[in-house]
Image (cartoon, rainbow over all chains, first blue to last red; front, side):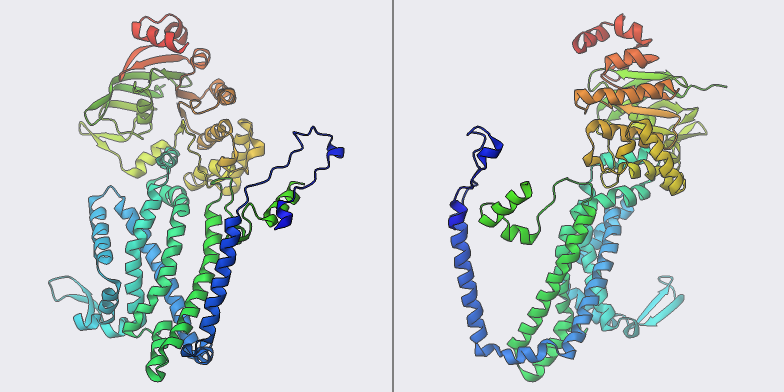
Length: 323
Length: 254
C-alpha cells in the first residue's frame, strides 16, 4: 500500500526539464475497492469452508460419482446434443431471419408463423411433444395430401428415437430465438454496404453471404454465446423423454441411492466446467469477426480483474511499457 | 453508331406524396464528364442512383448505353427486370459513394478483388494482380493490406474508386465523393478523378466542387426541386448563368 502512494523520483538531472514538465501524474486512488475486495475474499472463504464442512453434502459421494462412467456417458450426450441443436438452430435461424426480412409476403408470413409457434409454447411441452409424437402419428408418410397416394413411409418410433426427438425439439426451438438474433444482426449493418455490393453487380444472395452476414456476426456472436450456454443447461430438460443426457443419468443414479443433493452437486460441477470452456471459442470468434472493426482492443477478463488503473501493479506495468 | 452513354427522358421519381424528380431530360455522351450541381434536396443524388437502378424510376425512360435500366420494353409496356438481370447491368456501371461504403471486414486489396472474383469469375491471382495495379493507380500501393478503419477518409475513397474500376465499367457514377472528407484530403481524390476523366472514362459526378466542375466537366447541369434548371458548357453555366436560380445558388457557394 505504501509504495503505491510514494511519488516516483524523476531523473531531473538527465532530462533537464523544467519543474512543471517533470511533474508525475498520480491516478485517482480507489481505497474503497481494496476494502471491498478484502471483505469479499473473507466472505467467500467463509462460505467455502462452511460448504466443505457440511456433512449433509456427502462429499465422499460427490467424489465417487464425479468421474463415474455413467456420468461421462451423459456428459458426451449433453455435449453433442448442445452442439447439434445449436448448429441446427443457427442454420435454420439464419434462413428464417433472411425470410423475415424478405420482400416476399409468402416468405415473411411462413417465417413469422414459425417463430410465433416455436417461441410461443414452452420448450418442455415441445420436448414432450416430439418425444411422444408416435402417439399422434404412428407412421410418417410423404405423399399427396387428401389422397391415398403415399411415396414413402416410416414407423415413427423407429425414426424419432429419444435422441432425435430431443435434437428436433431443442434445435427448432433454438431456431426461433436465433432467427431474431440474426435478424437484429443483419439490420445493424449499414444499408450502404448492400448498396455498394449491388452497385458492383453482386446479387442479393451473394451480398448477404459475403458482405452483410460477416459484418452482422459481430452483433450476433455475444447473444449466441449466451444462447449456447443456455442450451447446454436446457438439455437437462430432455431427461423427461429419457434421452440419456447428463441430467437423465444423474436422475437415474439418485433414483436408486437417494443421494439427491450430492449428485446435483456433481451435475452442477460439470455444467460449470462446460460453460467455462465455452467462453474460449466465443472469445476467439469475437476476435475473428471483429477484424477491421475498431482499432481499440477490448481487455480480457483477467486484465479487467487485476489490471485496473489505480493499483500499484498497473502503475508499474504502465511505466515499464512506456520505456 | 454512337449511342449516348446516358440518356434520360422525362425521368420522374416520387417518395409517397413527395415528387423528387419531376421530368429530368439529360444526355451524357461517351467519354464525357457531366457534373450535377444544385442545392441539397434538388434530386441530383436520387437521379444518380436511378442510373444504376438503386432507386426505381416511376416514369420516363432512362437508358445506359442504349439499354433501359432495370426494365425491358415488351408490347408497349415496361417490365421490371429480375434481380439477376439488374445485377448484370450494374456490372458495367461503377459507383462511388459519399460515405465510401468500403467493406470494413476486408482489406483494401480484398475490397477491390471481391467483385471481380465473385461476380466476374476472374481467378484470384489475376484479380489480385489487377487490384494491386489499381491501388497503385490511385496512389495506395503500400496500403493493400490495410483494413478500411486504418485508412484516412481520402485513402478510403480512393480505394472505393479502385474497387469500382476493378469491374472495368463503361460508366462511373460519383455521389458527392468529396463531401465527407477533410478539406486537405479532397485534392487527392479529385486528382484521381481528373486522371480518370483524362483517360476517357464517362463520368456523372454529383458534386459541390465548383472548381472541379469548371475544370474537368464537359457539361455542367444545375438542378433544383427535381428539374434541370440549366445545362451546358461549364464556362457558360458556372460563370454566365442565364437563370436567376442558378445565379442565386452560385453566389452562395462561391
